[in-house]
Amino acid sequence: MPPAGRRKDAADSGEKAEQASPEQTSADETWVEEPAEAVEAADAGKAVEDEAAAEADAEDEVARESADADESAETGEPAEADEPAEATPPRARPRVGLPIVLSAIALVLALAAAVFRWQIVSHHESDTARAESVQAARDITVQMLSYQPETVEQQLNAVRDRLTGEFLGKYTAMINEVIPAAQAQQIAAVAEVPRMGSVSATPNGAELVLFVNQTVAIGDHAPQRTLSVARATMVKDGDRWLMSKYEPVQP
Image 1 (cartoon, rainbow, N blue to C red):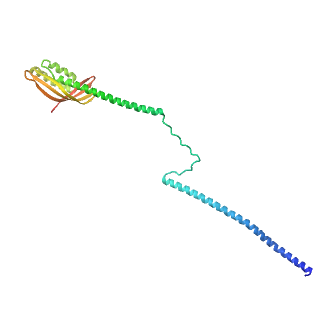
Image 2 (tube, helix red, strand yellow):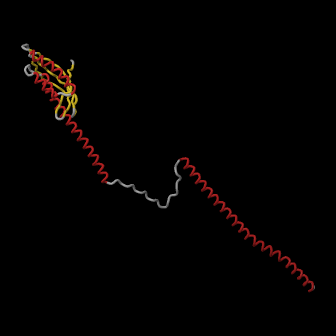
Image 3 (cartoon, one colour):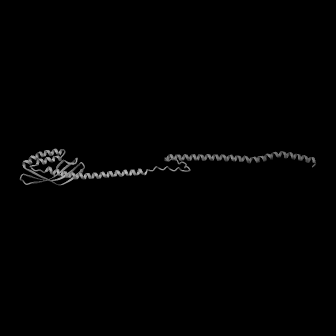
């Protein structure tokens, strides 16, 4: 080929190369840029996924707390609170002082001793009242039912000082009849109390049962012995025991 023809062909080849070169360059640039955009798109998608996962976790946490609150409301138990890193030790309850305990024990012992002492004293006083009332009732009964024709008035009136209450009036009315009869008929009587018992006794009163033997002689006739049972009531008047009731008990 002549030189002119080769130059023309070279020129044509150069133009073709210039026309083809921009397209290839554009293709290369497109190939380089596409991976960067893909990375950015992938990062954006991952961020969206992470945000969605975080929102889902938050919703799950809210749902769990709501469920715990509902369960606590149904069972009446408070929801469990997050435990602190270091639990605060409970405050110790104040202890009762030893002096207070000892004082309480001493007070109880003092009260018990007082009650026990009162029981002992009361029992002792009741025993004393029983013994004193029994002896006084025996003496008064013997005095009321024993007399001689010559001294009947003095004897029966003397015992009135040891009687009290309604019985004093009844006895006075009785001796107002007995004294004249004993003087006129020469009646003599002797009484004794071989047995007697205390029904009840307190420091201020006593109930007794008396078994009485009375022997009565009229003039020159043989003595007649009479057995009787009577109930007597004794009351304490100062230091003396007085008889307030004397009633024969029918067999």
